[in-house]
Length: 245
Image (cartoon, rainbow, N blue to C red):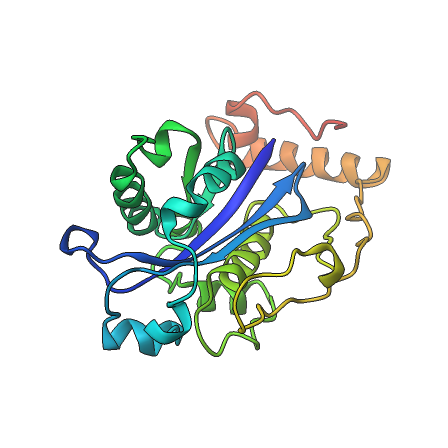
């Protein structure tokens, strides 16, 4: 399966009030491995940036003045995500902005959901960690992922961190490749933070029960059957002992 983990930065919170995307960052996962391919662009929003948003990402109007507009990068962006399962943290926010940008195009590119599948990693996190904080920073702490370089939000850095979180949250990965040399140089003067992780992590060790341990468990199940009038839960579910897997 090909997946793309994506994040955006914006001029504000409401696309319906004309706020625009100013940065897109996305990384590719194939077969639960980060491939090193990514899409990253800073964008000229053609409007002012809210003070609150500037405090979050630090991207000024002056820095973005000579960057491409969304229409200039729409075709390669759509090609990068086309047909993939696109993973986004709090997907409705980013999707609303991307759909608004796509709607502005003369070509009528349609909606993000029309060219790819969308997975909301925030919904997944809330299901797995009920009642806990599930921001990207909180998830990095929970899964021991180094986010020490995240002084400000950045779309590419946040996409890389979310990729690590998503893989850990959905069962880990067999390997991770994120060498700086594999990345294209991003536009602009602010270089994205990149992390180096082992290229090959050892596979998880599988420990199976011995014959003696399986027999001990079967004996224990039989004692439960004798102690419960209608049989133990193992028996009622048709489980008469541990099976080889």
